[in-house]
Length: 140
Image (cartoon, rainbow, N blue to C red):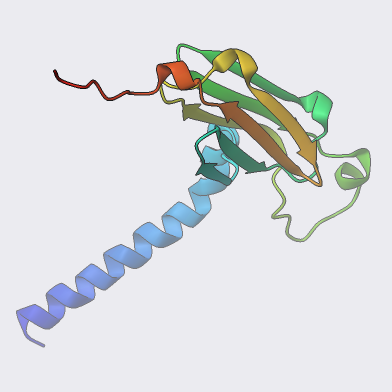
């Protein structure tokens, strides 16, 4: 086996080692830092809309705040007593602290932000303040 083949084999072994190591530490890191839920964002002329998947999270366990142009979402998904008492071979559902932040564009109206929770999806509407939008200046 030449040195090129040995280098490729070593590269494959290192990639496998890193991938397996990340699979083992990901749950610990996730529980330490908090889970980051998936989110979809969209924009039209009137508002920005953010949809965040929060299955199994109650409305009372969600906190939204805005500070210095950053929208912060914090939530807690608690494990029910039923889950605690059963022996699971494998549990992939996430329980614990959930956190996500979004940097808001300068043209939004932070005072008129609204949110609703339906079927495990949190929808956040962030209206655009038309007075803050860039405007064209005519040159005379």
